[in-house]
Length: 178
Ligand SMILES: CC(C)(COP(=O)(O)OP(=O)(O)OC[C@H]1O[C@@H](n2cnc3c(N)ncnc32)[C@H](O)[C@@H]1OP(=O)(O)O)[C@@H](O)C(=O)NCCC(=O)NCCS
Image: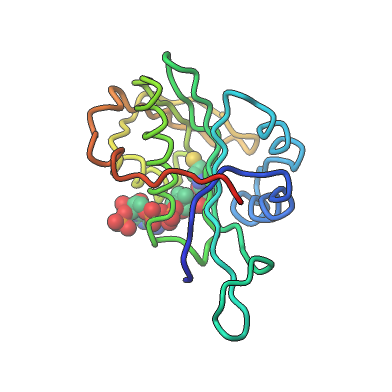
């Protein structure tokens, strides 16, 4: 894996994000239009993980940059934040990218004084549940038949987002694309 950086999503990312979404959530992907709406949503934190592309000589070639993950969350400061969606391409998983995307959200919560973060996750989604637990989320309830295919969701919550100050402090800040 080449160097990966984190930055706010841009309209020109939408094709890659929609393709990533189809691979990561084949059963119920968000549409391109849904992502487009989130780009316009002032409450949405929409961050991508982008791998630096290289040319044949190993030099950085922006045309080959690749979106390998994203997070969308709604930060309704100071009340609460809600994770909308997070995904990392299968071949880029277990390299800490999902955790770093979540830590960017937790850092934004800390900055805005938002102490409680919520999310829903399929009860069968062990990798995601393990990631959320490792970040201080706890099971908060169950939503029966939450997904279109009838699967239940756990609701998970992380209270007092400031509690894990260390992890929030170490989160990389998303950059504006130059
Ligand atoms: C969930 C997801 C975003 C995690 O991304 P990732 O980049 O692989 O996660 P990380 O490498 O940062 O892992 C962070 C921690 O999560 C846990 N984890 C992640 N994948 C795991 C797996 N397959 N099995 C067990 N634990 C796992 C581990 O605790 C891991 O820490 P460690 O590697 O130090 O042990 C990724 O699996 C994904 O895109 N899944 C499909 C989309 C999805 O389900 N999104 C969540 C919807 S609620």
